Image (cartoon, rainbow, N blue to C red; front, top):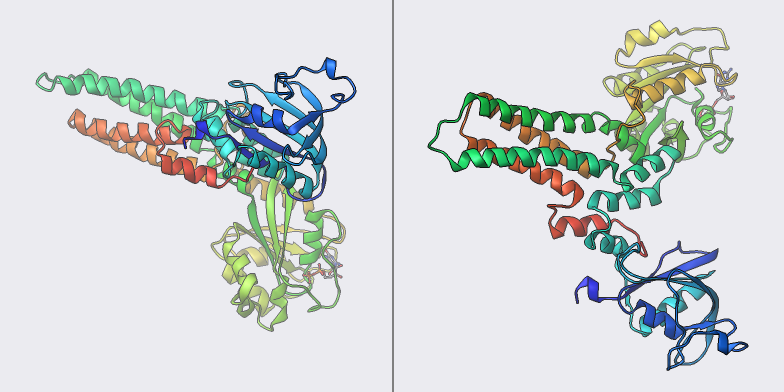
Length: 473
Ligand code: GDP
């Protein structure tokens, strides 16, 4: 059955216990099904006020909340007290007739209502099928649909803001503008290909080059904020490493803003690696305190085990803690060696105590890291540390309000592919090569950009995008 012919139903709210829950139905039978299973309040008391079909079914008004019960038409059994709304196609989320049944958020009630919808002609929705319908019915494009899932999963204010802007179509708008330029260019190329016998003028190559450069600069400006966009969407993984007792838990607590991990004065009394999600000025961070390292004698050897090593190797940023009040130990030196060349900030802690190690000492040994002094005990240097982390993430750039943050890896990859095709086309144009060859690359770039918005995406790509969704969305 084609999607448009199916009427699908799913529980759209989170599983668990909550005040209310929503069962959603979309498709041609949605209204008929809900009319059959919904018993409006007042019907018993004031039937003359209710609109009814000849069969006695309730008539739903478009976009109006109706209060009543859901009852199983087979048994007459009442399931739950509900509010129901029917939204008439095509101006709905899916572009089809849409019904939302708001019941109490108990799984028993939600499952029972869903089951009744299914018994009465609906089919279970697939993951992301409601949003997929919105895409297939042309309500939103693929990039907008992908942003829906990002909005749902947003961890911080900034992630939400980026996702909402993409959902509103800001990225698509920009991509379409670049694509429009490429389309004009393709027309120019085709016209010239159609008259191969005539000499192609210098001026034509200059025009082609101008078109290619225009598209390139549009893509480059989108890609210029991609690293930050990706971090804002996916979060940055940060590993906190250091020998026992340097202040790893204290640092973790600073970020958490509360004393969640236990600070202890006895080295070795510790937990396993812990990961915490936090927000640093709106940027989501996944922090791992590699406390497990202290459990073996050799710190670096400990990096060879399980999660500590994993966290160290996978980290986008390493915060290497050192104790300024004690001479650098073998452990410190080994950790510094392991961190060399990786994105790393060395945090020289306990500056409130007499110094045995200076920033210079650290810099001379760990050349690739920034060094920042802190006293976590007295909350000194912590803002400088946060500034440094933020600058690393944003690349020190100050973004303008209107800049678009490309955050999705799929979009970034496609933009890069389109750009590389255009660069190829650019160098061929400069060599005045045959127009047919140039056209192949420009066309490929045009196709890649179309995959972002879904204009040229295959069914396989579209399916893959929606598989990442949750049920009921
Ligand atoms: P971890 O073993 O690396 O997780 O270190 P902790 O965070 O548990 O800290 C070990 C001890 O050092 C605790 O007693 C902390 O209060 C203390 N400590 C942490 N930061 C500082 C600091 O900046 N100055 C001083 N004097 N003590 C600190």
